[in-house]
Amino acid sequence: MSDNPFATPESETDEPERIPIATNAQILTAGLLGGPVAGFWLLVMNYRACANRAPLVFSAVVGAAVSLGLIAAMLVAPSNLPGGFIWLLNIVLLAVWLNYGPPFLDESTDDDSAVVVEHGWARPIGVILVSIFWMLPLAVALSFIVQPRW
Image (tube, rainbow, N blue to C red; front, side, top):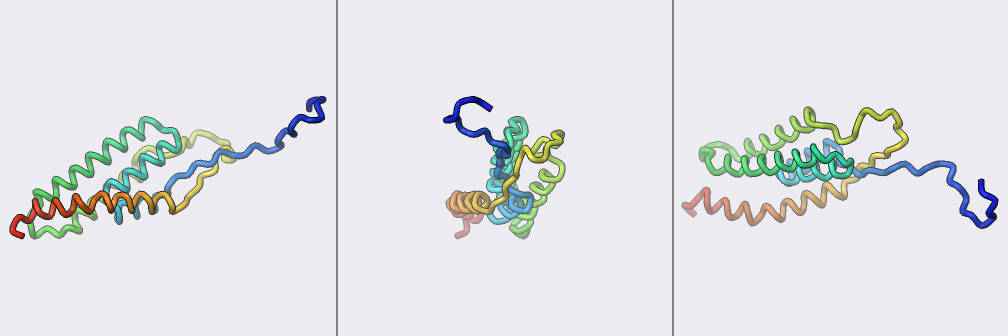
């Protein structure tokens, strides 16, 4: 303790670092409602919040490839294939990534009090809404390309 009577008192407990990340259920919900862009966008946000640079870049590249691949699959899919099958494929790909992909937080640390993980629905809902509004013009354009008989 210092001899200065005007010094600020030292904190007895350090405030733990708070990291806002989305849960697996939130990511899958975003992928279901907002498409592959929303699901992988939340993955990228989680890796950025946890300062994992390599998985961040890799998940962004995989997300872009999956999104473009699903759009290409819709263009070449037979007309009798239900559209829900391709949407289901998106959810399966996200679930596989969440199960076997790199973890968000480094699990090698033993100090559990150093990080507090916050789970809220504000970011996932925002990502879903932005993704839906981004996909609407794309869906209309693709419907004219895929079904020119209109």
